[in-house]
Image (tube, rainbow, N blue to C red; front, side):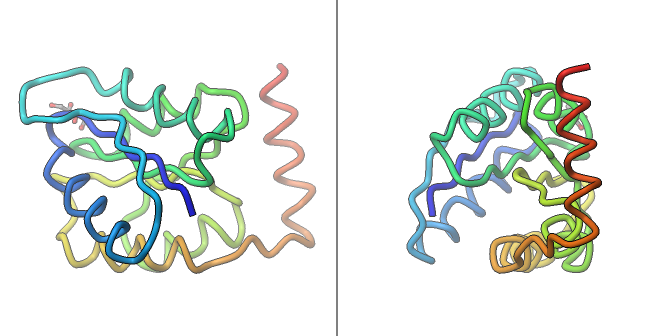
Length: 146
Ligand code: RB5
């Protein structure tokens, strides 16, 4: 799969680790920055990951900031994006199965690296369940036009 990654300075180290993991697992990685620990603004990177996924340049996105919150808010402003902040394997899996999330967001200042690596695995390997969730996702999609 092709996976777009983005972070601010607070998420840079975790993004680097997750990018390495994805490459080792055979995925195609599109790293949209940040590329250092120098302070930057998370909206720029949430937007970049959101546009890469919404535009079809990537199948999924991974976004990291200090809490995962700011960068998820930014990504969710891009039409077609369902970005989910996850805290563990269960929330990562359910973000795919129930919410059909297309971007996974991490709070690098809140989460241990092993938890983030396992959560990313759970997200990538889970599938959207469809069924009763289809109607709810359709309502989310309708909000894009509101
Ligand atoms: C940066 O200091 C921090 O505010 C940012 O990484 C993020 O946590 C915002 O939601």
